[in-house]
Image (cartoon, rainbow, N blue to C red; front, side):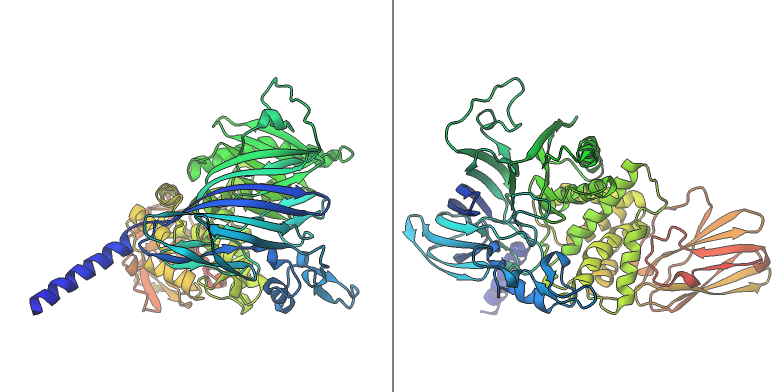
Length: 625
């Protein structure tokens, strides 16, 4: 009997291990047919969604996101906007004066014909009616028939929507006059993965979705040009700059056109439309066609010139990201004037376009880089926003530095300043905090963008720059289309470098511990110099030290962190390096010897690269006369 119990326990344990280590993800195929009224900004549509359950669990319910319901007075987005200490300026208006401001939520002021909404009118599963309830921005659906592992089901929905006045990301008539910025505009199946359902309400932040194939037809006024996700299937019927070279597009009867797009293996579908769009195309050497959509502002020669200049520079960005991260897997990318700043979507971005050129190029670089980190890797931005925003900031800052020829010694100077301001603010929260739960927008922004980018830049300090870039390429190759988690980037870096990094991921992302090292003393010792370093902050790091002697010679020293169980290559190959004994983290001080007297030393400095995010650099160097 005991033997049977032991064998049974072994089988269950083994099954559990296999289940946890096996990889799976759900799949969705959308077919949508939408009719848009450009006068009322209301639309109706049908959606046929084939949902494939690749999980090991039986599903009795499914959930859809209804994002446009956030743009209504009293929504969670509205209430959060009214209660956060530093509301997004785009989402508020000042009903007071400049001297005595009274900033109120723009959502709270919307009238019924200005709000956004998204409603399911009917829903069936394999032809049978299902029960559903609308709970704010989430539709809760009780299935008629459970979906067993490996099975698919067909969900058919009729839906209706109203495009809100442009307040955040999506909407009508943005501040630059773009008619329709159609992001998150359709009932979108929520993600279900090894952590369960991801059904966060739409309050402020970004998105998480299921990969699938989209087949979308959009009917609207024939004077409007559409740009967005996917490949246009009927270019020679539509025209508007999509037609093949040499084709004369026949004039269509009636007041509308039906645009037919297909977007394979994406987790989102976005479009924008305007009657005054210029549409330019540029085919890159890699075979990707770049599309550019911007308002025809003939009287603004600077605006028009900036958008023309942007086009070859965008091709350079594509080439940089392909070489330094991995190949872009689609055959088109569209840069579209729209939205309220810059926001990434599948195979496209919406950006405001009335900018000086440096800003226009910068926002394009950032949003385009998201195509690799958000629309191919696609971490859960509600839980790990720093992996998307931070990694995107890191690679786009490198790209900008290279393409503009700035060649800064540290292209991430501004990013580090952003992190230091967060660390000094008293508002920092661990990066494991849910994106909607940060104390204010400042804390979220600095944590996601600045501290997230420093994670990578500083990782290069820990494992070496060559290993960092190898890590990025390996991470992309191994985890594209897989929704990676923080442990995945850590394990990739460990495998590339041979260095243990659990301490790095833990302290940087799960705590608010800071890095602070200093040079405590220099003492003469029998013709040598005893250098004592001190660890003041709680977060451990390996330490690079450069010594400049009065005769002009230089020498470097490297104190690996014991828990790394390894060491990086010499980052200063032109300077002789001495690898010192490991520094165990628990010891607050560490002493090593230089084989020259103290009087021979002109300068000694910790981390001249300034890639280690030491929060107080005043004690990182000593200069002697």
